[in-house]
Image (cartoon, rainbow, N blue to C red; front, side, top):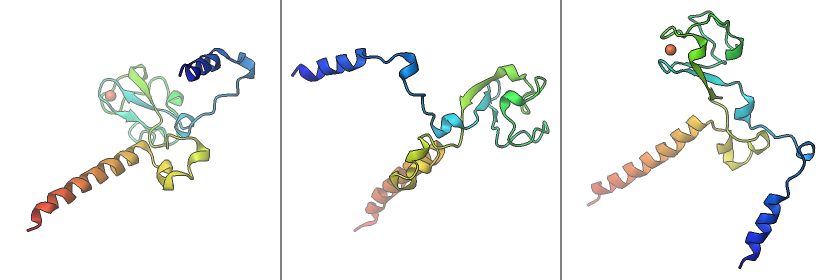
Length: 133
Ligand code: FE
C-alpha cells in the first residue's frame, strides 16, 4: 500500500543538475508574441493587429512601441499596460496539433465557443422535448 508513495518520493528527490535538464519546450501560445492590456480602460494591444490610430503597423511587438506611445482609448502611458500573454494561439505544443480531431488547433476562445455552444444546443434540445405530446 505504501510502495507507490515511497517511489514518488524517490523520484521527486532525484533532481538533475541544472545543465543536464533538457531545455524547456515552449507551447505555441508561449512562442507567440504577447498581448498587453491597458489597466486603466481594458484596451488590448494585439501585436498582429498593431494600432491604426497611433499609426503602428501590424506585427509590431509591444516592446518595440515608442516610449511615448499612448493607449488609443484612454491615453495612458505604456507603463500602465500589463502582459496578458498571447491571444489567439493554440495553447498546446506544435507536435500535438494533429491530434484531438482538430480541436488541438483551436484557440482558447474557439474552444470556449465550441464547449458553451454545445451546452446551449443540448439545453435547447431538452427544452424542445416539451413540444412532444
Ligand atoms: Fe486605456
